Each structure stands twice: as C-alpha cells, then as structure tokens.
Amino acid sequence: MSVIEIQNLNITYKEKTLLNNINLSIKSGKITALIGKSGSGKTLTATVLNGFLASNLSLNFDLFLDYKKISSLSKGFFANIMQNPASAFDPLHTMGHTAKESLSALNLKFDKNEVLEAFKDVGLEKRVYDLYPFEMSGGMLQRAMIAIALLQKSPFLIADEPTTDLDLIVQGKILDILKEICTNKNVGILLITHDFGVVAKIADDVFVIDDGKIIEKGGIREIFNFPNHEITKALINAHLSLYGINKDEK
Image (tube, rainbow, N blue to C red; front, side, top):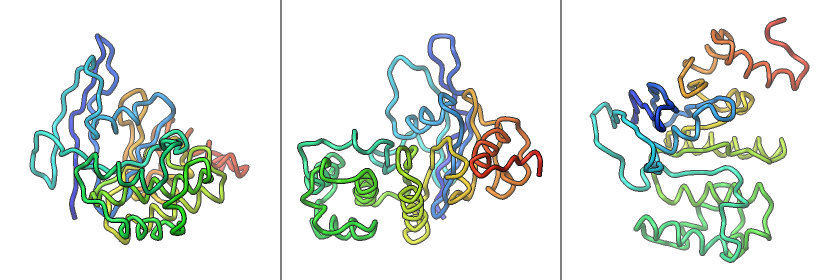
C-alpha cells in the first residue's frame, strides 16, 4: 500500500492564518474524505498538494511518500477531478482532443484506444470521443473528466466536490464509479466535499476541517456514530435532515 502524507501544513497571508497545522494522509486503495463547510480550507489544502499556490501566500509543510520525506511531488502526481465540469472543458474542443491535450501537458503518450477504454470504464460510449461539451449532459461531462484523469495512471486522485450540480441519481452513479476506481485500480482518492451524504456513501477515512484546522478525524463508522465536535455533528445532521432525521434525537 502506497501512502502520501502532508504534515504540519501552515499557510498565512500577511498576518492571517489560512491553514493551521494540517496533518493529512491518503492511502492507495482507500477514499479519504476532507469535509467542511464553504471557506473552511478544503480546496486550499488540495491546492498545496497540486503545487498550485499563489506566490503571495507563505507556507511551510513536510511531505512524505511511503513514510520517506520528500521535498516535492512531481508534476501530475495527483490526477484531478474538478467541480463544475461544464466550465472545465474548452467548448471548441472534442473530448478526444481534450484528452490528447491533457496528456501532452504532462508529457504522457497519447493512445486513442486507451482513451476509448477509459471512456468505457466510466460508462461512456465510443461516440463521446468526437463530442463537444455542449453536446453532453453534466453527468457525461463528469464521467469524461474522470476518464481523462485516469489516463494519467497516477496512484492518487483528488476529487473536488465531484457531484456538485448533479441530480441525485447521477450523483450516485458518479460516486459508484469513484469507488470502483479506488477498489479495482488501487487508486487513493482525496474526496473534497461539504456533503456528509457523499462521505457516508464511499469514504473510508474522514478528516473534518473548519477554519483552517483539522478538528476531527477517524474511520467513517467512528465519525458517523460517535462524532465529538459540534461542527461534525452539524454536518451529519444537515445530511440526515434531508430524510427527516435528527441524530441528536435518536
């Protein structure tokens, strides 16, 4: 099992602390959820892992790969699935062209047959290769983004709010695909979300973040059944309230 760890992550802007002593680990073959409300520091943490950070921010952290300290991660170490796929694709490029450009940017070999196979793995037909974004639904675009991310053959993947703006049925299908990728391809996934329903469905481990700090962590069953922090309880109850349930009253 491969594992990537980020320890003692601190980010400041001028005198304001944005992330405070973040410690996070992601294991291959496991889905690790980083959950918190909007503005809690979820996406900023992922940005550090991807190496895309504004130069006006001050940061320091320690990075470990398979328990050995490293100075940095190689370009494209993490494959990425972004939220709002409709805005992530160039409207003038077909899915096939987008796949080719994405691989070229990482100096990876392009093979049309591999692209078609990746599309098949996420439930897309061959014809998608020649489709433009405006010819596809939100669910199809999200599947295409997952397929293109898989072409990197990275052992780790970051999924940032992967079900945003998708209806419940499509959300479920996307989450099933992510779980299959994790299990069948031994990919470690960092799932970034504000939705505990998403976490409960597919996550193995959970890190709860609030105001730039990890306030609670543990296995999904432990966190769901025995939450300690009020923020964690609020996130769980926000999900359960959709079904008319209040965990505090159980």
